[in-house]
Length: 287
Ligand SMILES: CCCCC/C=C\C/C=C\C/C=C/C(=O)SCCNC(=O)CCNC(=O)[C@H](O)C(C)(C)COP(=O)(O)OP(=O)(O)OC[C@H]1O[C@@H](n2cnc3c(N)ncnc32)[C@H](O)[C@@H]1OP(=O)(O)O
Image 1 (cartoon, rainbow, N blue to C red):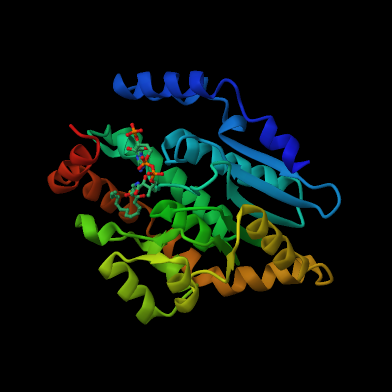
Image 2: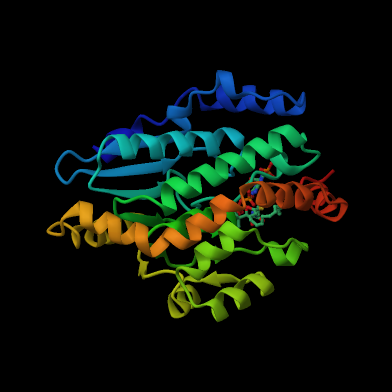
């Protein structure tokens, strides 16, 4: 079934990307012409009830507003379907995601930037606060925002020779609260502080050592199988009480972010529009 979904990978991706890119160049919001179902694929395995949520924005799954919105909708779908568990992964062979699409940040329109961050916060609430079991099958490099979404999950398997981490510090960027809380929920406060203030990108071995990932996989299908095996651990656990306990463990972080949404958004916008950050984006894009 999963295979079917992969072979159904969109032929109209180029068109979607062209519409999005043209509109971004013209500084317009392009949310109406996008086929969100193609940017993030949701497939449910009838046998075990697990949903696979696959990021599908070649060439590198960088997050623009449309991909973020598609992820948000996909998470709604998983919730609505009462899935027994969810595996987050990517369609690209050696890349999970390269984080935010720098074209979304360079010379950004403030209104669109605020919407972008607001949808990211929505995704965080939906994923971090989900009651169903979650796992990330990290099939390749995963710097920055993709790492953040993987850390929202309860389990991570990553293929060898990939890198993972949040490297904002290297670009002179202070890391937003949702990212700090999420990393701190996986590794110690001490290790979170070290990782984020040094902007470390961890090799798979180092990520395993520090606890950012739970297993190293030989390839993408091994990573996926390991995620399924993790979700299987909850097969005989009553889902409602399990979900309630998970929510209780994460409740305090969620309340704090909910109380500070506006401030968090203002800080993000300030960080992105900062001239130093804009110079880094320009350099990245060869402007
Ligand atoms: C940056 C701070 C934002 C400020 C926000 C404030 C607070 C938030 C703080 C932190 C949260 C997270 C922030 C982010 O997510 S920022 C994005 C950071 N990401 C990166 O720095 C990754 C950059 N990419 C890579 O290192 C490599 O692409 C890779 C992952 C190692 C893969 O290498 P590979 O050789 O396989 O591919 P290419 O590098 O050739 O890439 C192919 C193609 O894609 C373009 N591209 C890659 N990444 C991005 C991107 N993030 N945005 C836009 N475009 C991207 C790349 O330029 C190539 O394009 P080309 O036209 O040359 O084919």
